[in-house]
Image (cartoon, rainbow, N blue to C red):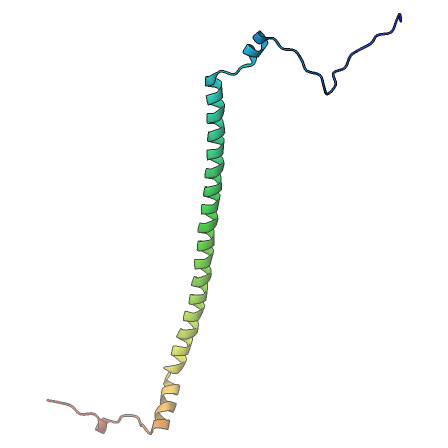
Amino acid sequence: MSGKVYTLKPDVAYKPTTTHKEKAKEEVSLKEKLKERFEAFLLLLMIVLLLVSSVGVAYKSMLYFELKNEKRKLLFERAQLEELLNRLTSREILLEKAKKLGLRQATDRDTITLK
């Protein structure tokens, strides 16, 4: 067997042997554990704050665009109503309606002056 090298590779059943001193070195102190938990909590808090703020901005944007749309509709309706009012109160329309009712224009004789 000269010249041949046999290497052992760890398989599924391989369990490294660690001594008590090595385990003591690997243990994490309470301060480090608390620090890691606190960092995880802060990260979670930041994610929640980001989510809440983005939902708030989306809600405010939705309200803004709904109000803008409603304002546009109301302005259009107002313009239509003003046009209708101007058309119905024009002199020609009023004279035509007065003729249908049998009214005539007032003359000087129709006015009464009180003393």
